[in-house]
Image (cartoon, one colour):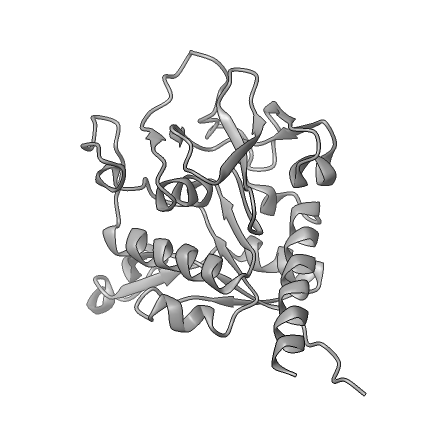
Length: 249
């Protein structure tokens, strides 16, 4: 009798800050702090997976050896020098260490054959890691309101049309209403990726890999509670775990 499968282990990237931001005592204000948004992990728990937060000081390839899937969370702007451009007047905070760590996660995850999910910044970084570029700044007042920071996080502010036959369309149907908290977007598409979702103004909102279980979305599905994207993630991670265990048997 084969051993029962354990819950798939799904790793989440975070961001680095200072302990001052969470009210640490004065002597610890400058202490480095790794920050992970709990809505990502609770979404995976709800879908049946086992989340683990990934410290960016660790070796990404060694971490991925233990994982069944990787999630790249939202956060700072990707360094434009990663896609051959200079930072512009609208470039926000950049964390080169995070960029390097998460690109290594993407590369290791694809090489290992496990699912990789990118959310907001995570989608953008997948494109950059595989050779694409970004639109550095979406002009306010042109097209959709993509930087809808004044709305509640779960406010769905514009539709996304999804490509028939894509994983995204299988999960959501032809169209999905999404929230929107970004001022950058996927620009030149990387080799091997396909656009599977666009906003009415043409901004790329979803991408998928042609041959790997790699998916990116520009919106934040983790805030909705029970979003089907996390069901897909956990099932794909379970499939990867099952395949690996059969190969090792």
